[in-house]
Image 1 (cartoon, rainbow, N blue to C red):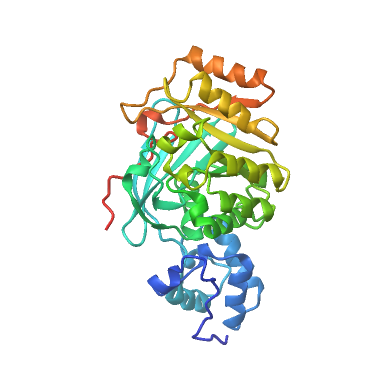
Image 2 (cartoon, rainbow, N blue to C red):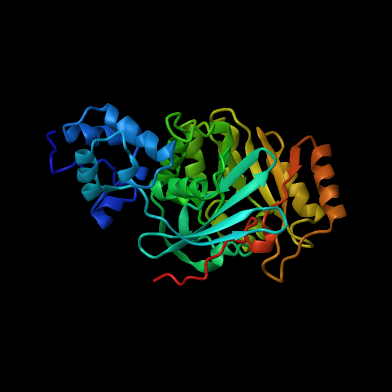
Length: 363
């Protein structure tokens, strides 16, 4: 076997370069083609790359030593130059209410992220984080109060799913990019992670079972739709008027609702409906004025509304009464707009929507 001791850098400048920091290739971060290229450069047949990819993403191995289809010589060479797992499990918490599980992971540099496994009959959904912390500072979201440390590499996003699979034995059916961070401020790594999670040689999560959520980064929404990605797109708005949204979500000053609507209206993307996520807060954004604004925003678009009753974290925000939630849903439905009410899981372990928070201080 002829092995070259120099490997070319396969990751573009738009991606987080784990290799440049750890000194080793991070195989979980690479497409099949990228691993094949490394194997060819090492003097190996291209199919070795496919084998490695399958072991990582289908068999969810976390050690090169376990890839027994490779020769001992090749495994020893790879162990010096590559790694599969970079996440360390710090804590695992299970909800007594609904069996939701929350995982606190430590990244290679000491930063912490949280990941959630939600169970709903046959559906097993992993909510992944895309950043360590968040820079948007939405007033009702716990993650926003943490501050921001850095983007995650695609492999660090994927490894959350692989680690949950290994730890629980669950066969994951759905992925939502709704954990810590703003996915569209880490656009390229998020898209790469979704593509790898969707790969048939790996976990093979169907495109319609992967949802990417954004707080409304309009230029990236436009890019996403123009590129016609096949995954579901969700846009968090949580207000029907611009005045209130700017108070709740400061990002609205740069990306107002009118621009977001215009972008979605002119660009159908892959044809999948866009979901507008609306966190309902009692006496704040559940007023007739706000709901009327929400209806005006969504009506006429290939879109639907997902109402999310606020999950208690800050005392100044409260969940509306059930009767009010039903009234609002009926009002939206009567206006000809598709609407659902989403009940978050794991509220007793602070794993519900808007509750993810790590009290580890970032340097």
